[in-house]
Image 1 (cartoon, rainbow, N blue to C red):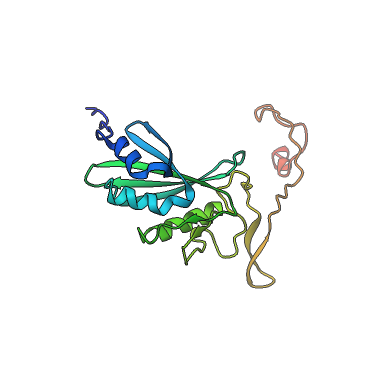
Image 2 (tube, rainbow, N blue to C red):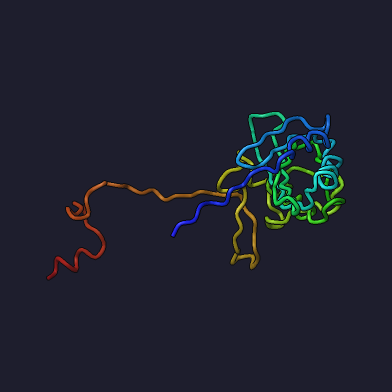
Length: 205
């Protein structure tokens, strides 16, 4: 027996309340699929978040995500997902930044943001002003680059291996070595016209 998907809709008056609370700090607001996306000024982020928490009742910070748009300026987008327990509704808050422009930290509002901001820093290289513990959290010590950037190579820049000679773990530049192989594209049922190791056993019978 199939059940219909739960119907999600924005509580009446939510968009108007957000516009009133954020004022000039709100650059744009979009509503789709029962969810609201607020694009706000990056340098006003902390004040915006306090208004959304205290005035609009979005009490919980659920997630912080990064997005890389290499062809845009600013290149990066940081997305905050907020949940209202009283309204049973979610919104997203979007800010933009570049690698050399720090986003204000919201750890003073939600302490859990410390870990989430570290993830965005680790994956994208976005820094957060006011986060005193901005270290890598998902990658290993000595990792080079930020793996969620669109220009990061799929193989990475370095590889990790254990050296029998030096009896320790080493980081080395990635080398994609491949031995020369000759393919004849013949069907395995037709058989090859060259001798393979072990063929002499069948010929001796």
